[in-house]
Length: 143
Image (cartoon, rainbow, N blue to C red; front, side, top):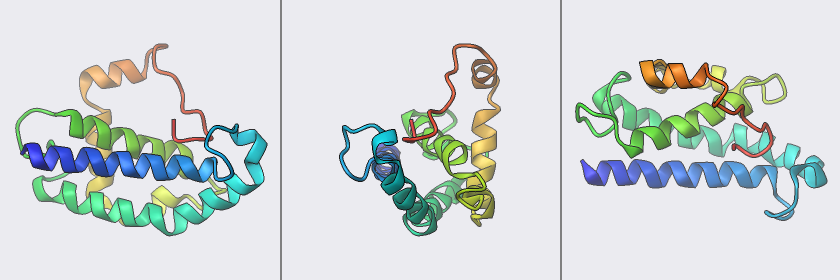
C-alpha cells in the first residue's frame, strides 16, 4: 500500500511539473506573461500528447480499486489521493477550455472522472471549495 501511494505521489508530481513547464518553456523563473506565445504553443501540445499519457496511466491506477475508493485500496484517503486529486483538479481548471479543445471532457478516462468527482464531493472538501479560503487556479501554471 505504501509503495502504491508513493508511486502515485511521484507520478502526480512528475505530471504537475511537466504541465507547469509547458506554461514556462523559455525560463522556469520567468512570468507566463513574458513567454505567453511560447507557453500557449507548448501547453497546447502538452494536452494533445503527454497529458493524455498521464491521464491514461492514472485511469489504470484508479480502476484497480474503483472510482469511489482511495487509490491504495485502504478505507482511508492518503497523501496519494490528495496529490492525484490536485493534478486532476488542475487539469480540469487549466486545460478544459475551448482553447485546449476541452481536453478533459474529451479524454476517455471514466474512472478518473468519477474519482475526481468523488473526491471533490467529500463533505469537508466540498465545504472548503465553497469557502473564501479556497483560492482559484491561476490559469497559467497548474498552480
